[in-house]
Image (cartoon, rainbow, N blue to C red; front, side):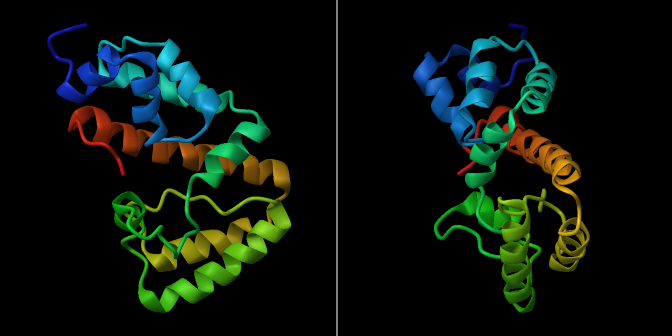
Length: 169
């Protein structure tokens, strides 16, 4: 490990397997993703961890993606008491929540899983526009978009964990 490792990265690298898995579960609940990142330690630099996360996300099976998606609350309804989902969905105005939830249910009925989008920095209007567009995608196209959004979310959450040493929830 180099001297440029942050306290959070040092903590992840030095944690026993179960503790490292617990820390990573705060980022993404996919067991396959967690196992791959735990096995890849140590990460000398945060960027190497991010690259490993991207690679692990790219290898997730449809069942692994379903597992990862199930760990995210619906857009427009952050999990009560969860500062991560509240922070990430901070751009959603109260007047957008009902429509987001209604469209999310329609999306879920069509695609078989909840709508996933990297909400950080997006307004409710932007998320509504993305949801309206993505609801009509074919399943394969939508799976790959979902995978990309999951990768973005994972990077943001890993950065909070690694760069600042904060747990994400």
